[in-house]
Length: 484
Image (cartoon, rainbow, N blue to C red; front, side, top):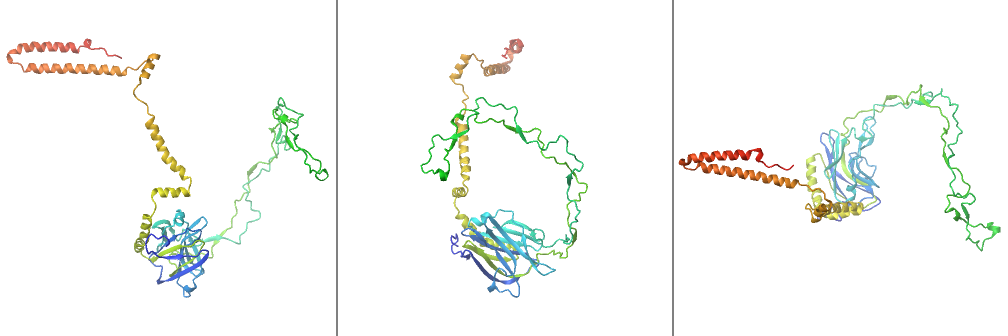
């Protein structure tokens, strides 16, 4: 690898561009499709990007005449899997060859396209792990970097479908000559109205129009250029009579118009155009004709397309317009846990090393803006808008305290000033005075209870006086009137 983040990391590299390449290897033992799933995974790095070319693998079918020295594009395979790109068409192939149980012929079945965006896997120049899982229940999963990007069923999510339709259209059935497919027809009983004038023009002169004042009827709109001079080499015998080039008439610049005045054209209110009979439902309408259905002579039902042809070798048969495509860590197994451990020990280390070598957030933002210049507008708004809001809220707040100028303004205009604050202050003062009186009365009462027994008569008189004072104090007449 050219820019390997792991010292000593080596792999298989496609070095030449615009050429066909082929390389293969025999498996230790053939893979048979029984009750265990198939898991195949490998790593790809488009070190120089990719313009047009593929990086897919082929699982070569086990056949008696399989010769890896003669491996070409026509060599039979069981599964083809991997990335492929040309132009702006980004693909992730999963193709398997299905054997027709009736004829014994093989037909390619293509899995549906992934819904995920595959562009970054071809352009970011990072090592990506491609994994295909095919289960015995006919389900499949396609993963990139251990994330599912496509999944489905071999029975329903491939084209053409594994099983043909039970019925087909009869190729010998033909539409009858008198079959009427017209849902609407012209009303045969309709008659053109007597006042329908098909010859009326679409536009007529405006009879209400009036020629503007100052219109110069005798002045032409264009005149010969008075400053033009006939060229010295003008030959009237060869070139004809010389005429000065036409220029706008200066006399018409201040006038509303020159030349013969004509009424402007307007839409003709009596225009109806060519008459056509109205459309009505066709009483003889028979619907859209279709050939009748017959039993499909080539019909069969294969409910276990998972049981494909065993394969015994793996190969790369590629053509690319871009060089330096890096391959590594091809792995085929029937145990998913083993595959994940293998990925962690191989691709996981490369991912960690590439992540540690990635530029910071600021560098990533700059790189993204170079590819998409419109991001600069987003960056400016993201930074500038909060600063503007902070300045507005912090620097333009209103002072809650009134300035002397505002007080003087009240004096000049004799405008009524609010007195709510003064009333509240007076009420608070009255409440505090009442509380003070109550507390003093309570203190006097406690002092009297502590006096000697011999002053009991005097104490009773004092208590009687205090009660009278308290009654007088609580009387409504002694209360102050509050301001409204």
